[in-house]
Length: 232
Image (tube, rainbow, N blue to C red; front, side, top):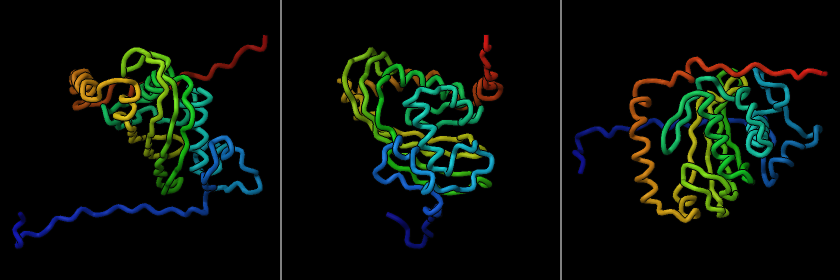
């Protein structure tokens, strides 16, 4: 019970606004149809600091998601993620672009035929203050490789994800990523409670790194130089 004489503390609500007319809506399009919208109806948002191939912030999210996950263009991560990015996940936080690449490779190894991905994108902000996007996805895949869940099961799965990103000058510098892990673990034939216990034990040893600072790779890691093949 509360004392009536005590003031009620209220947390301010944060509401983000954006003009939907600045972008092309995903609607019922899949990612391929979206990135191939006719030029005559393609909406051009001011995107200073971004690569010219991106017409607006939704176009940016849809294109890089498709290139990285479907076309397996892992090198694009260096161009679209900050060197010192922080990623907040349900299991553990990670820091640095190399962690993003490692996580992507591990997921692609476990689910190499992953399909789906894009579902909807909401956004706010601009190219000066930075964009804030939320990307909801739905994926179907087959567990053909070993992963943090255990040995490959060969089972087909469906899982949903939600990625909230802070973006400036063509690069994501902070991300909050969640997925319905419980549902995925069930589909793999595992016991969710036992899996949670296993993950809790494995992440305990990482606690000092989480509490006392970024890993060295997050502070000093630089992307590799572009390699130009010889014409010979």
